[in-house]
Image (tube, rainbow, N blue to C red):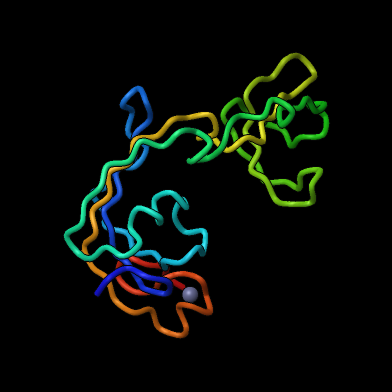
Amino acid sequence: MNISKDTAVTIRLKVSDQQGQLIENGKEPVAYLHGGYGNLLPKVEEALEGQAAGFKAHLDLSAADAFGERDEALVQSIPKTQFPPGVKVGGQLEGRGEDGRTHVFTVIKIKGPEVILDANHPLAGKHLKVSVEVMDVRAATAEEITHGHVHGEHGHHH
Ligand code: ZN
């Protein structure tokens, strides 16, 4: 079977940054629902479209094709008094951004009474090297399509 919209695809995905630091080691296969459900980077889905089990590809993704360029406007300073005690550099919290969407904020610095938060994706601005190998392709079930993800061994568990 070939990969097309609404197929459940099991892959091994290895991702590293430009310095060769591993982000995903690819040891555990992952299953995703193909067809623009946001489970995989669009550029990776594009490379897999029409392929079958056994296909391998190496992709070099620019930051724009991966998690986007960094936006320094997403770095903001918030008074420490607005945080629960124990706020630490490297800590992450979820909150609503000015656009009304949920963002993950990372504490990048604590400067006296101010906490500096970064709402960029942790991989924003990074050029990524992706190795992908297709292990299995099958038709997705109606339930998986409704949920927007794959169930089963390497998929989503409820
Ligand atoms: Zn589900």
